[in-house]
Image 1 (cartoon, rainbow, N blue to C red):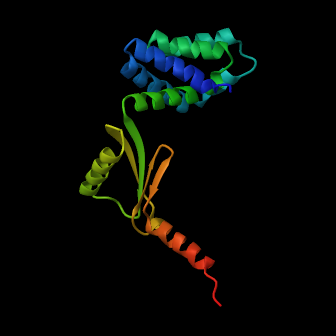
Image 2: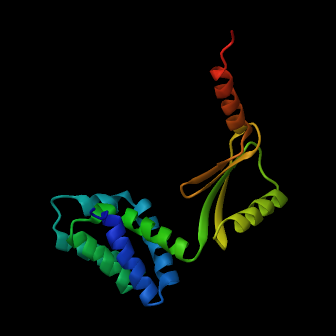
Image 3: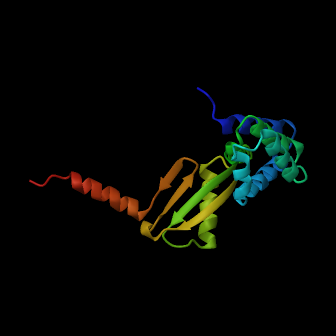
Length: 182
């Protein structure tokens, strides 16, 4: 099975970062490059414009990023343009960030609750996550969703723990629909 473009280039950047002990530096550079692309629509349009030569696109990237990021990061961007993969730069760097977070045991978590959590409750959530996962640190996004009624929904990657009242009511309603009255 063929690897996706973002995994191919992202894995190569990750391997280089680990090999050269540049994980933290390249992590910060990747975030900065993603931010640049997301806040500058014109850059994306320019890189994807069919009438602009690859060499010109590469020069633009070098001029923009050479002074702010390492040669490794600029080299990745230039290679991706040379291979007509410029439309996958952001996805590649996001994949790289995900790999680094896994490597550093940083979990990305979304906690949804019906009401805002207190600081003590947030601390309890973090402690419980440390006990039940392999992660040492967490990047947690707290969301208030009043439709949950009570309880919480925790998402870590592709895993979901749903202890919300809404889900329990939905499950109960499903079970009640199955009951046949004579």
